[in-house]
Image 1 (spheres, one colour):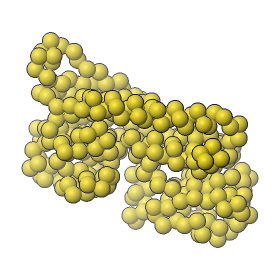
Image 2 (cartoon, rainbow, N blue to C red):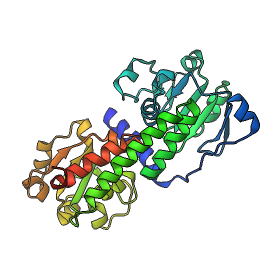
Image 3 (cartoon, one colour):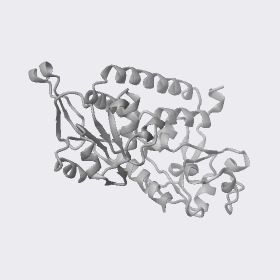
Image 4 (cartoon, rainbow, N blue to C red):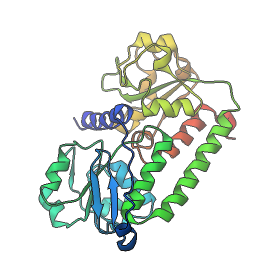
Length: 315
């Protein structure tokens, strides 16, 4: 049951990132803001969110937002987090306020936050619930591209007073992505990749489809997504043995390794032993959190994928 709930959580976050309309947050540059340090931003729902100054007691209820806060240097301002926020490790010492949209509202209020940050993994209806308790809420849309990610880092930096740290982080991330792009552009070989997200039913496991964020990262890392070659258009389809055999992927990447799926178990599935990825020992466990959480570790995920797909370019 836990495994399936995690899958649903990841799927919801990624699906929304692929299809939700992007709202461009904007600063309201008034004279009063300049003199008082007040902050006025438009969030992902088109709401104007105002703060008297950078938030000092923050509740984060999405793992991606938690990772953004710590990455830009605002970790000490975080007062509480959702159950699924487990990175970086020190965040686990903070109060666990619940997850899957079932939060301990009494505990959240008792922490006296000056800002609650939600993401697309959270139900939009919860914004009104938090506001009815007198809390200030900012709803951050998922990025659709790596470039959008840089904008999200800047938004959270404005909310928390870490513009300088965020700018340095963005420069670093851009440099790392550019380094991957430069290496990948050298190669004309695009290995076929099957990326698995849930093999609860090993005869018909779930994978990712065209247009999803993981699909974008695989392509940017120099690969070809198996589902595109198979003519599959669903974002998160279940695939049959026949579809996998037909495309015969060069690599199998196990995003569901976190659920216990092992390299050995893949080869034991009926019909899978003869796949190129299996016979060539190119089945790899993978940290799915680096590609399913729309935060700064997406660049870690891109680098890891590129090294798996093109090890010859990263010697």
